[in-house]
Length: 417
Image (cartoon, rainbow, N blue to C red; front, side, top):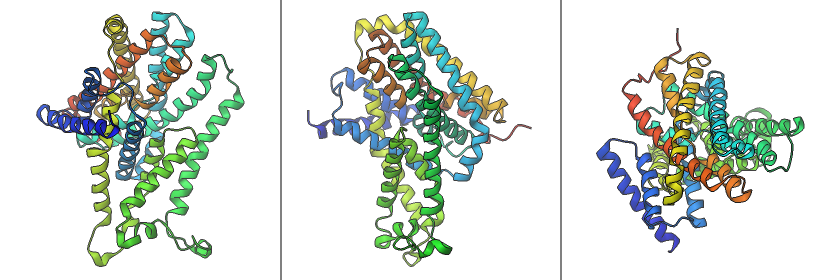
């Protein structure tokens, strides 16, 4: 099948998913995942996506995360870190322990249990943020808490991947120097992003304005090129470049894209007033359309195709998958909720929303499963299928629980008194 034919099928399924979401009043993300799983299992979509679709879907998640960061206020994000450290810590430790103990009990392999626990550690922040946006909750303090916690969670999880995978494979042992190196890389990345946002993007002042070539050239000038006709292109280029920078530091490019959106300010779009166009609103509208209507959904449909059913294995692993799902659901929700309430001072409605929002598992989970099952062959076929099914159930739980809890959630997320 031609790659373009696959893309056409995926886009057609996006229409179907949007129709089903409208009729059921559920978030489209759930139906994107559902359509991907159905289409791959009835043979309409291939089990192995071509490189074009894989890259296209990765571009989709990069643009989605950039769009979410673009909408967020950087001051709110930074202010949320001190409230979110506990959510990130306890919200990661609990699912790791649940998955580790459960898989050790089921398959009696320490190394496999270690990697299963690692796969279930990082939160699929993109799935949660898109689900919150669908419900109009993406600007609440709870959403910012989820985003901040998930970013911190991903940083910690990526560090654990670098540390634990070689140990599980018998290729290395943990060393203080190696751990410090990983932490240092994470800190250096955020320092570089801060420099980009604080020095490269704004207009130069003082002695900086006398630097040749770039002295009088900031982001405002880049966005204003061609009387604003290249504004969206400039923004997408920035998203991809910072995403690539994140990739060089070992993070998923989507994390870099979110940070890129976060440090772009509305004041940079104050140009070409003679055209009577609000370039900030226009750019946000275009990027939102690209992210949530035609490129971004490809990522979620492709994610759904990861769950390929083998009848015999599927029946055999259902009890294990359900055990993992129930344990992870309870452990994740309770740990994140209690941490949000008692370390982040969120009120109870916002704390429960954060707990539900931390349920998703996506990019890093599949990376770890690929390493453990395909590359290192540490994970058994039964464990792989059980984790795949568990991940799918957890991802489906995110939009369902957010939708269900929305009626009880005020959206205020005020500090508890």
